[in-house]
Image (cartoon, one colour):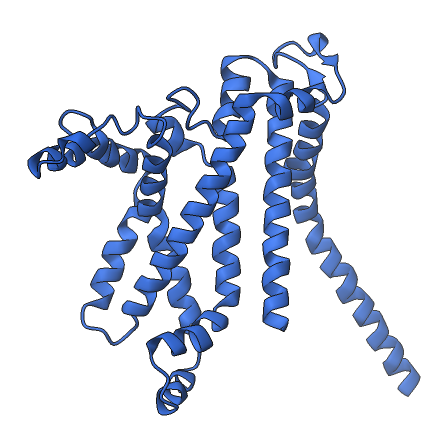
Length: 303
């Protein structure tokens, strides 16, 4: 009797395992079709010279696309810009997001209203954000230059998006404005995972704001830091829309990004193979930086 029951349990267990794998089949099939197949095709295409239209014109060229990519000054500028953009936006958004999250903790009067106001830019289209900031940066009637003239600092006025020294930072400012609200929400959620008793214990021990922040809040938010940084890395590397709306990579390639360079190579110059090589490098950079950040934060959590 016991053997029969054991055999029945084993059969039920096997049936559950098989059914579990069967439920995974559609997901794996979709991933294989739309992700892995597409990724493999892009990697394969990166070794060819092709205009993207007539398959018969494809010409195998080995690693030449990658050699051109690493030796082209414009592509080097594009990847340098995306690294600067990534470090600046992630750092500033983390700082502002965590600051707002701590200032607007539940219990503060009007905190819900302020949270909604800060989050509004996240809900807006990038086109709307670009239009708002182009009104700020406009060289003749823009708010920034008008204000500078009003207070007697006319020598500081400039064509903000037309100056290679300021164009990239203007784009960074717009991106920070748009996405800081999202980081605030992540940190608000992260703060709820820290027990209130921990804050009370810190107050009893006489810990001030800075000591509480460095000893309780910051280490207690490592998982949130990881999420924010990884999303920031991936978002920065694939950034296209706001750059294209502002400068289209100009002036003089000063704001060229890998995504804008990819678009120009494929859509404007009919260099599908070279564009595929840019895509592969973007993917490698995203995966490598994200994996490094996750590994680093995991070690800090385990320490």
